Each structure stands twice: as structure tokens, then as C-alpha cells.
Length: 102
Image (cartoon, rainbow, N blue to C red):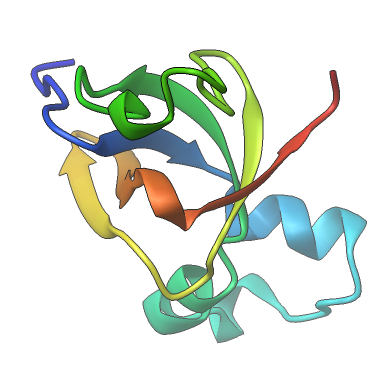
């Protein structure tokens, strides 16, 4: 991957809409899923990189997510970055709503 995250940002690999179709209440044929639907429904992703400035203001509490964590995010936040066939999401640290699992 050619992206290096800087500042207060976090790089995520978002859950794909196909995963939601198989496992969740959203029932659409693949041909009916638009890019807008996919972006609007991104609510979960895996943390791939954390910028060096993340959580500096919260040093005494520590970071609330780290590389490898699965997190819930504000569905309308972030910027998409396309590399080959993969789409990544860049969000600010405050867009992380919760960590799923341990």
C-alpha cells in the first residue's frame, strides 16, 4: 500500500456492502447496489494504520483503537481512497464511535 497516514487520521478497510447483504437486514440484488448505497452503509471497518498525532490530546487515557481492531464509525464521515481493486477509508480519530470485540 502506498498510503502513509498522517496527523489525526486513521486508515480503515471498510466492510463491503456484499457482507451486509449476506448477513444483515439489507436485501438488495447486487445490481441494485449503487456506490452511494455502499458509502452510506459503511459503519464498520478494520484499522490498518493510525496517524502519529492520533490521541495525543488523550495520552493519559491511551488510544481507544489500534491497528487490527474492528471499529464502528460515523457512516457519513471519512474520505475514500482507491488503490487497485481495494477501497480504503480515511477518517479522523473522532469519527471512531466504538471498538468491536476485546
